[in-house]
Image 1 (cartoon, rainbow, N blue to C red):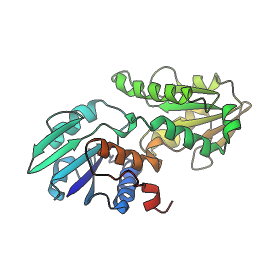
Image 2: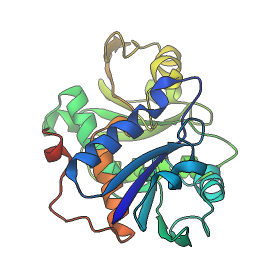
Image 3: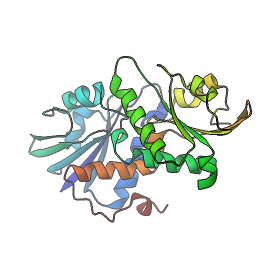
Image 4: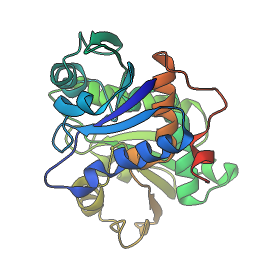
Length: 268
């Protein structure tokens, strides 16, 4: 038997924080690839400390639904689960072999997924996308350089693909600030993609209010200062994230057939 555990941060203040974890777990569950699929969190129930009590399989694959390596993925999760170390690692415990993978946000397919979703959000064909700009928005922090490094790497990969005219990076809590980046974009059409796991205060209020664009609950498009600005959903809510979770588990040794597609199991 093999089991999959998807770990989210969770929040006592934001009910939307855990929604992507449950959505992706449900989608993967429908594929039938794993005998068990469980969710657990740092700030919600079920907690990481009790999740192994819910799992019967002897091969367990743990995938964190986080954006980057850092304090939570390298210290908190290994400590709370009693693992031998940060990812990639394998721990023998409670009669199980626990395979711990890197976070979904650092996966190699992330840039391709963002480009595809950015085009869809704005309804752009290939020619119009090349005349548009893309800004990937990160939270940013001066305390953890890994957080921004992931955003920069994905932005660089997206830019090298040549899909959009320019691909830039902007942050909430460090330079360059996303407002300044948006003001400096040459294109008349700009797509904003928040590199966040879930909808929440930042994606629904902080970013739109700081940029002077419509909140997503109202509309995802804004005309401002001669630009048409499209605002995508957070990266962690994209359906393709479930595919990345499967890829992470496969890379760690899980028996995941190459032909399995989460979207097909979900009827998408």
